[in-house]
Length: 464
Image (cartoon, rainbow, N blue to C red; front, side, top):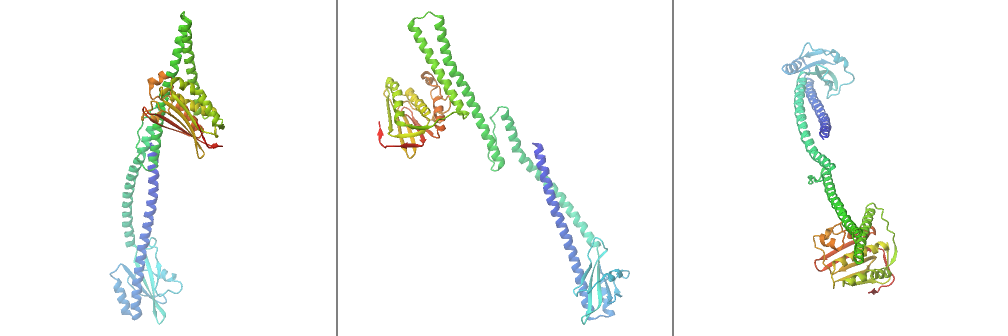
């Protein structure tokens, strides 16, 4: 992570350095050019001022006055006639013959800049024409030594260098702080993922960020929570499977040993054989349920849907389960609308209802009532399985569809529950594209409502 922080710091520094360098270079050039243009404009204006005085009185006295005006200044003046002959000069040894020869064409009345390359020449220069009755009679040459401009540029360069160093140091400090702030959550996320890779999913990351790093932290925290939940579920699942398999196997092994080693009466032999058969059937059902759930998890569970006529379907359900409810003294009622057909897997729908009704059979006592009601609303089939049994505590309702979850662990064991029935119900209903809802109150009963799409009807009267 330090490498990432270093890379980000280098990238930010190079980017900001290039931007600052470009801006400072642009500002330096602009200031320099602006300063030189100001000097040239001032020099040109001074030359035009002398030209105006000479146009009024072009004589030796005026020429001497012009030279006198420049004698105490940092500028120099040279006045020539139209042919280029020097009439007066504030610097006697100033050589301007080459400059005179370079004059080409007519000089505009407002004057012209002759030399502006302050870096290459000793002095910048301008020229202003002296006119009399629209005729040029001479020229005023103005010169300014570039030493002052060079001195100004040196001071300017020094200031820019100081500003550049300070801004560079500030930039580096800001980059270090920002890169550390950026790298800190990434380091925490790296440590969290390493912890998760070792099987420890109890990580805690800050999830308050509203940016991309916050989203990533939220995603890792959510993944950690899910993996921790799955780890806990897997542990519970394996423990429950071991428990569920061990119990019937213990019964089968124990009673088989008794049958093989003891001289029993025929009555005892039949009793023990009945227990062995019962436990074998329980083991067989458990293994079948586990295989069904495994297929559902792998999406290899096949749902063979067809149009199922609910009249005959509910008649068969009533015939199959009525004896069991009658034996226990529980009122069993089946209601449905005649002529309903629905697009489902008939065998799986029967498995769903039998699982739910078996639960009702287990948790209802003599005198209770269990009912199955099927009705159509728009194109949705609702099947309601309702009982007046013991009910389910509110705290357990969110978990009853989890595998091996039992509301009353010890009593469920005595009554033969494995904790897989409702998990299979939910998986099968969802495999049909439907949904299952549950509501319950202690000692008042439980209601399961199943919803399936694709129901049709031929007639619309109620059957009981």
